[in-house]
Image (cartoon, rainbow, N blue to C red; front, side, top):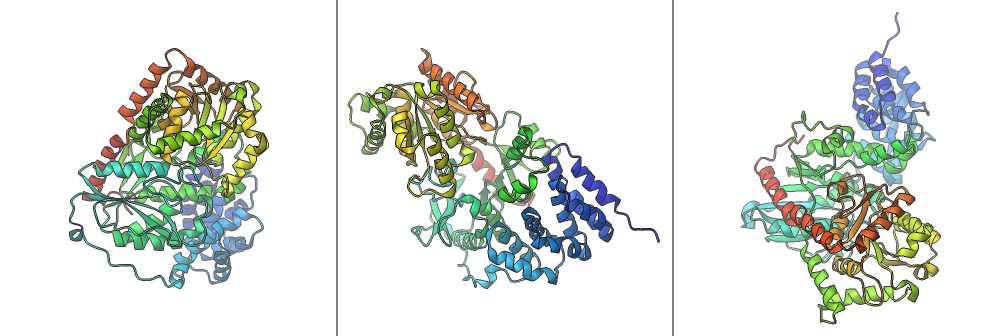
Length: 632
């Protein structure tokens, strides 16, 4: 009898092995799974060899998923033993991949133990147990029945109801928590966008959903027209985004209750492949709410960039994937896109190329509705802040909030030694997270004597007293570069997170200077590893500051090189130092005021939040009329 052959599976594995990039190989995962399904038990030898191939861990991952889908015998022989493997990434992928198999009694106890242990692996085990029809944590918790969902007649207001979500932040209309933990630019965006949407007659209600712990969020009546901030109750202490995957079940339960109580909701806008979007998409599918997805190449761009520099290879992919859940996030974003009734993308210098190369989406052949919608900012607070800073410098009275913001900045500047008070400021604003490059910026500044002597460095963001793990990591690196006790004497000012209104005032003060404390002609620096668009960079430009920004991603679509700012490789300290030096020269040039006016006019014309809201309001109205889209 001739032995069974698995040509399809071997060919598919070879295709992954010889793919020109990690992303191209990831795109072939379904091909390997389908081949194993067709080959059945005959695929076992090829899959067995691939699973143990340490030299190509991407192929090993593909083989685990294919083995789980290749029939009960293959899954039992190759995947179930991996649940107790000493190799973390194989163990984790086995727990997830088994959702593709029929129920295997021999694996239930181990999967249940993994789920009970928690963490990201526990979340994946929960997914498999749910797929097998076993009682999950949500059922065992005995969730209360949700409140009755109001119908449209109860609302009495025309126009679309839009829900927008960012679960990893405490979002309120005052933006008091901006720059703290994971509350970054997206919180500012959702607040300003929600208000701007209501100015469009096509929108009657905006529901901004974010986390709420232990009933801390005051109740709101979501049925009235207006912008409502609704808390999704989550158990336990606040976690930063990377550790929130185990909250999928309580997040799903909380989102279901909130959305049912606030209904009818016409459209739900999701913006990233995180646990909030994952849970919200499940609830939206259950409740029949169409979704819109802002499709950004995350973590795709990060994978491509690290592969290009050699820091991520096929031989190291498994460990990186275990730490950062790269495969899962790529697949989750694909699933969210497939469910969405409409896709939104942000401008990029070569958008069609990035859609094809990073997201494997053909902008010509793909029939899914897709719109390019730039993000936008509200210029009014920035213009007001600029006027108040100039008024205060002349001794005129200003609003109490502006006076308090300037007093807080002056108190920081007063800690500088007298010899450094005649220097301009380089300012950066954002979360203290490695992706934002705050520690990298401080290290580069501290190690370049010429740069450090030309300006003081003001870092705005993070919780300095009770930092999250991510913030603590960045602060530790900053303290190593410049010990905290020496920071002010050397020109480094750590301000911690500040409300959005305070930041607007400070940006204006960086440009115009503070009498006797800092010189005019300061600059803004973003040292982010990646920036899909860059709300804080736009705000700095609208404030008249010359900006330094990453050359990859969205900023390249609006920063004019050598005119309004400098685009730079932010991974290079030398390049970053050179760009800041050039930015300081631009800010001190005779035509600086003309270029500042040009930058503000550009932002006002192309990137106002009102323009963004108008585009999205039209899109939401279209989706609400025809929600079928491409939902699956």
